[in-house]
Image (cartoon, rainbow, N blue to C red; front, side, top):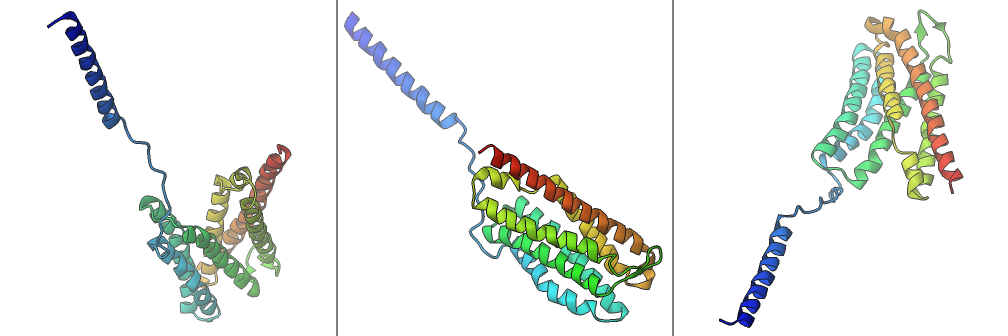
Length: 235
């Protein structure tokens, strides 16, 4: 074998080795993570739970006006079940990757329907708190603040969704909104339960928490508006 043949063999060996190395690297390199996609199904388990909350609203209204112990118990139980499923459907959607576009739309609608219906029902039957005395507007004032905030935020989020992505990020749910929802659910549960004479002494704490929830509602609205204003100023 001559010098020229040796050079050709070495070049071929180098080329083959380089090709093998590229193939090995191609197979061994990790694939980029796939983006999490929403489920194409409409009736996923979280969505069924959310639909259950919507269907429970007229039942809640009906049991509220049943003036006996089981009516009060049923009303409170329905609201507690709705509050639990509100957390549960989100947990299942995240853990089992069952989130859907329809579910993302329906979940806040179900929450607002349940909360607004409960607040209006409580306003129709003013409660006589031992500490505060007979004050007709005691529940009405925070109810107007909470419902007004929810209507305003729904309109703002719809407007932000039609604009650029930065505005949508500015109105994304934050920790303050979660605290608002938590105090709201606890307050309304106490107020519904305190309609029973066995839990009547809890009424002042329920009213106090309702005012805390109303304060957090207004505060979170101000925070969202400030974020939107900053985004608009940067344009």
